[in-house]
Length: 161
Image 1 (cartoon, rainbow, N blue to C red):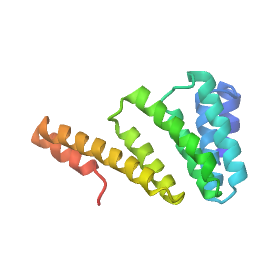
Image 2: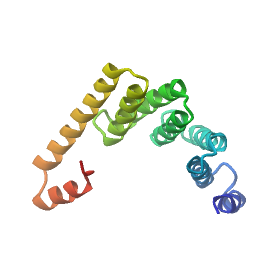
Image 3: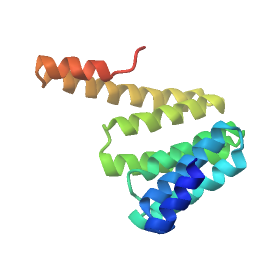
């Protein structure tokens, strides 16, 4: 299905269009879910390169793709490859969105998980602590400076613990 959509999009908008890059990324995720990690990495890496070429090396959505590549690296047992991917994703997110953004939290959580897998408890706890501080900061901001309706809407978006 994605391959047909990619072929149609490439024919319509060109092989390097933003939509084509999204289809390529989704194909990578599809192959990752099926356990075909070699194909998955190939597609996700290609999508990353397309976005980087089009938007530059600090484009905020590159962080999402880098986190995807890092997850793929972990799934294939390549923890060392995942680390620079997540570090780069963190730098992009911090620069593009600011140090207190929830995208930064997502990357910090992945780094914490990676370091726990690597047996480095100190680094894992440091990243998790920073993620928790940012999350608490965001919760405080949203619960102190908003109307009751906005507070309830915000609380509904929080993951259950």
